[in-house]
Amino acid sequence: MPSRADAGGKTRIVLNAANVTGRGASIVVANLVPELYAALPEADFLTLVPRTPELMEAVQGDRATVVAGPVRRGPLNDLGRLYDLHRGLRRIVEQSGAGVCLTLGDVGPAGLPCPHVVFLHNPLFVYSTEELAGGGDWPPLKRHYLLWQFRRTIRHASRIIVQTPVMRDRLAARFAVDVGAVEVIPQPVPRHVTRRRGEPGRTPIGACAKPIRLLFLAAYYGHKNHRILPAVARELRARGLADRVQIFVTLGGTAPARLRAELAGCTDVITDLGPLGAATVADALADATALFLPTLVESYGLIYLEAMASDRPILTSDRDFARWMCGDTARYFDPLDARSIVDAIAARPELARADLRTLADARLRELPADWRAVASEFARTLSLPRG
Image (cartoon, rainbow, N blue to C red):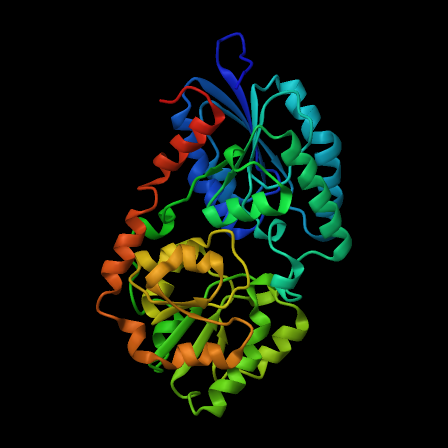
């Protein structure tokens, strides 16, 4: 892959993370970018990120010029993305003299004057509306535009990076992409979990006396499937399990008013903790008896790895992405069927299998050892010298 260099011989790389706003994507970028700087000592970087504390702290570097934009939501974000995709980002890349652009947010500008590598981590591009069962996060017009722009992006891209073979195969099938142009680079457990073990009793979950305490750790997005919870609550009551099971969600004000009102009537079995900071995740997992994730679709699911690293059983959806990620470490259910979900919850003996630690360790060993290894694979895909 050819590249352009500045007068000092360093290749300029534009890291386009301007639209990375979701929590999962932000965690990936915050863990990846510092290691990518280290993996490419013969490069300097122009790094575009939203102005969030987590990302701003992570992307600073001696060879990095950081351009921070506002955190936009709703129509303002949509308008800003239109400008960036069709004018702003291309102009930045041209003026920077970049030798390569790495887009870390799925959709980038088309037809850049340098090689363009795209990291796809939003599953909504490769799963159908039928599979989302009405739980998608994009209105029809927005979905139509993003799929159109994504097709333009990948048509001009030099390489595409995904996190799993599931995403690679779905991308190839949906967009007729040559699998040879797709790199599968999984990620390891995020640092905020590996840096310290969780301590029980430090979150409200630990104060709950019920024997089954399920942590549903996800901000509100339609595909996360929080809307199944009222039906799950009714099913728990109908089976006489309300005094044994409590589900802890992390929604706060992110959920629609209608869902918040429904969950307000389910406090006997559902507690909303509000959003959890990264430093609290390990403690919350230590207090929970299992991770509970009835999601309809994921590209990866770092929270699965966090649960494995924390010795916590996993109850999750019987879908291709979850099966690839979790294998034998999880118990599966139909995420659209409250009875199936409660069947899985009620199978209490299987929540604490003696071989869980062995299974989890084996699965984690199949993934990259650390974020340095991930950055090395990204650097290889960019076809630039590595340190």
